[in-house]
Image (cartoon, rainbow, N blue to C red; front, side):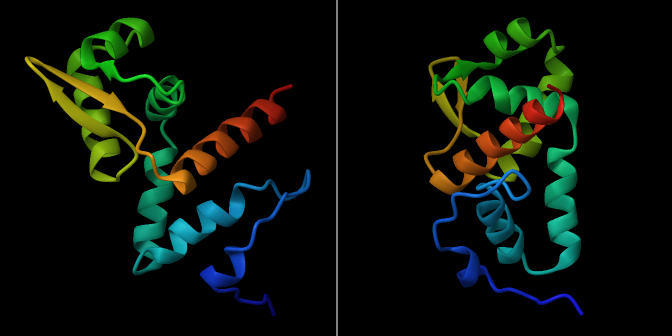
Length: 129
């Protein structure tokens, strides 16, 4: 039988190992905070899109970017980009800020989100080396 662990058991700092990257406790805590397994699956499905991962990777530079900049730099057409940004915004992965006529997007200052996104990026890069 697989042992069930609670979110608090994962809150301790974990340097990770090659088999268990250090971002997994943060990602697991985020998933466990969701009310049910369907919501956790929907959350992970949100991250299972190549365009959304590309947008998140681009925004992890730390700079705010306008919708126009993101679209041009990533070669994503505006209607599609707006849909992806809306999904990421609704999930709390990106933060919008209006600046005059432009909406600027960035990654929220939540350390667990940043660590999880950086960890996913690191894991994917290691798998493709």
